[in-house]
Image (cartoon, rainbow, N blue to C red; front, top):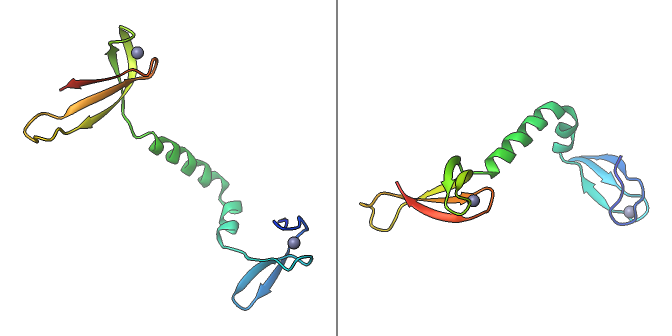
Amino acid sequence: MKFCGNCSNLMRVKAEADGKYLYCKSCNTKTKLSEEITIDVSNTTEKKDVIIITESEENTFPVTEIMCPKCNEMRKAQWTMQQTRGGDEPPTRFYQCDTCNWRWREYS
Ligand SMILES: [Zn+2]
Ligand SMILES: [Zn+2]
């Protein structure tokens, strides 16, 4: 069931020539029913998997165990590789300690 965003009344499904609409009797608000709504309900298990993948993709930085100069201990650190301007120089690795958020760079 859907409720109207304008007046919070219950909306009815109304079939029209070009598709189905959610229609509010009180204020005449009309929203087209998209097909995605139907997919959402039927594929709950698949949707769960997709969410997990999306979360891991958001965290694009690889993590490694490295000596953090600030903690002076082995820590998990995210790192990124950046090529310096010259191109003939080796790329620089930038680390960020997961524990203290200290950032430092190291030449590979
Ligand atoms: Zn309404
Ligand atoms: Zn640290």
